[in-house]
Image (cartoon, rainbow, N blue to C red):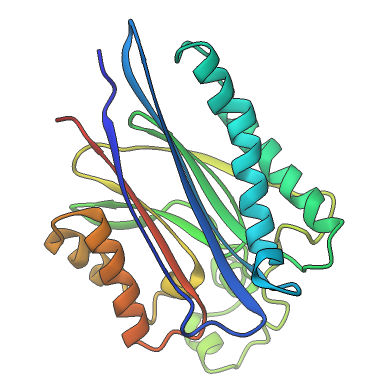
Length: 263
């Protein structure tokens, strides 16, 4: 029996990007046909990092390139060779890919990056995450953040040491910013979670130019409203970027939306 067909949209904008920061993203889709039916596997990656001598040497671009290369080698090539009959340890593949990206950035003078990546096989999404890029599940009931934001501001709020009001009024020092990024230390901890998709839900991967610290620029209810009024995921992605531009976000904005279609 065929697995659900994957659909997606991807959009990015660097108009409001800080000079020292840049987003990178990638989507790699693969379909295999065997006696078991058609199998769709998608890799979706967003990253927000520091720029090197040129945009092709940015930390975000290098990290995304590394993850794509590792997943292709460890997932797509074996799937193709075995006609889709391949038992992939997806969680470990994602961790290995992030660790490879971390090692590459540790050996390159391009700074650090936040990154979120998802391998979606049928209706199951495996998500790896480090930093303040993020993954969210969008359902008719609203927007649920799936990943932990590795930012000092979020940690202080989660532990009750500060409120968003205090942070937004600069009453609390959050100058350490991200406490976990790729390329910062060899002992990298990678968060890996799973999410189930159905025709009534979508997976949103985005950089902090969209989600921000506290969704103050583009609230979650507005994200949900865009999804309900959009006729496809590409249109929805484009609309999210436009809204972020209209709200004058101070960082680059990248969004990927992933859904499943049983038809």
